[in-house]
Length: 144
Image 1 (cartoon, helix red, strand yellow):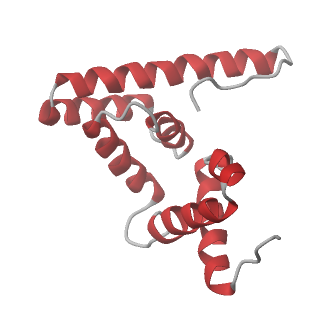
Image 2 (cartoon, one colour):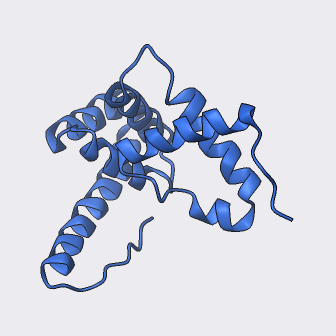
């Protein structure tokens, strides 16, 4: 039986999807959607609709803060999509590197090393994606 969204859950979800589209991440968390549509709706609605969609900081600013937090925590996964979102939102490669340097000085060089590895993986994969597109081939991310 398919569950219908109430008006209360529909607005944050729609707001969250708008935010995800701006970030180029509309296909994010589809594994959650496959496992539990309700979990996916909650994640999109709350995280991206209620939190990322708040006034006070631009999406660009929120992305910089999130990158810094994720770099500081040296997360093994999850950062790759944030690097892509950052670039989609106009944050340059140089600015991302500056975030890594700033955070690395406060949290230690191992966090910087982890961030460099993840960002390098994304840059390499983006080159592969562009080459595949140019050659008319399908591309599947191994990172996301």
